[in-house]
Image 1 (spheres, rainbow, N blue to C red):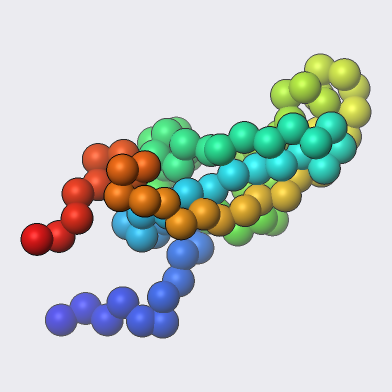
Image 2: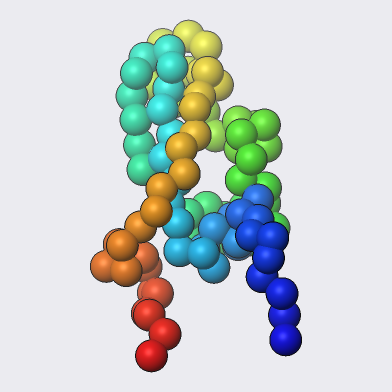
Length: 93
């Protein structure tokens, strides 16, 4: 029997397994976006860390970059998702 505690959600794969979401806010221009965790895991790999200091290395604000402003002044927020919001996830019987 595998032990799921202590509960740790520090990679994209673990976020997918937990069925949680992630959003990003640019603190420079105030834009916000809900990130597609499934797509990020496909592109970056399920072992990619989802901690702020690791995500800020691979995610940036396109609008700020195009305008020549600071493009990695980002804040990430974890979200609980309802079953309907989870891609490919079905509740256990």
